[in-house]
Image (cartoon, rainbow, N blue to C red; front, side, top):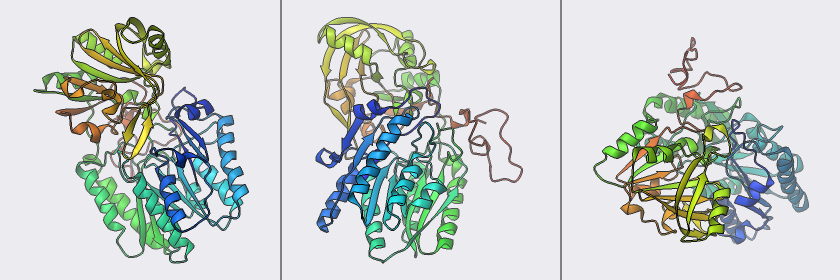
Length: 491
């Protein structure tokens, strides 16, 4: 068993190298010695289940990097080779279970997951290969051709990683015993967007997927949401059905569910206000705290996390009593470490990594706390935060600056420093949706805002060159025989 996970924004100029994996999470066969994080929850489940059956278990690499641009050729070769080397030493094996992401691309390789699984299949032609994926994956025919079972997280935010790990183990065990013979089918939904599963029509659709799994012959149902900021031919939502031995059942069920999902398209995605409209809504709220998502600078989608567009506007409008983070600026963190806690400091914050981040902002404030080694929860997993700095600016603006690129998942990212979020008028988080569940309990209102930055959530605006334009929302009905791309992206 192994983990290899990153989400590649092919538009990002920020490369992903071995150091990025090492900074975030890199273990060589020892991940189950640590507390679980999102992408290692599966390894803990599989070890527990396997040891209960007295199986011999070989744990290989666990490598996780925060989303950014393509993984370098050398880094990918080294990570893949470690998995292959460990597998070769363990052979013969009966079952291989992999927790991958599904949207990893490297220099010279657009589909790392299929490439890794193909290498595993070449070594183990008769082994059962099971693959668990993040739902923001590119489900490809190449991957399915080499694996026996592929499943995806059903939930976004992802709080079902352990449940899916249990599911994959059960299916692999049943396959090994001869009880089932899995076959898999895909349906291209021709949609490129973001789908929050915790409310509305999407909540109901996940329930529909789970209900379908109780139908005769159906073993598993997954929706690969796709990762929109990847300019690849297979980018977009696909329905995946695993059935017992009958490919026609798998294909028909995938098509039925895929079309039902497509028919819901106008009910699945909200309108995202721009920055000015979002701040107007926040100021008009009768009570706080209001949470505003700085969506377009979300490191979890490959943005640098160092844009200061929102902060600049807060200062310009004189908005006070604010908490905002996480600002990725290792240089600023270093300056604060040199100055020390309780020091007054001037910083040139953000705007360092790429043009989409805009210009840096000159600020001043008092350093109230510097701390390392903390984490924030995402479901059962604990995600690292690096070194955190709490900077108090004039106007009672509390900033959290750190040296490890990561999005905000949980109020812990602020409150462990001593920031009392419940007392704030406005909380600005660099995130898409993962913060939603944990912040809902304290927020009077949550505003998902299409701020300036690298990963604007209005997916019809993404400047694809390799992915065809026959997708919604670029086209209202890409299944229509005469469907043509809209003249203006986003229509």
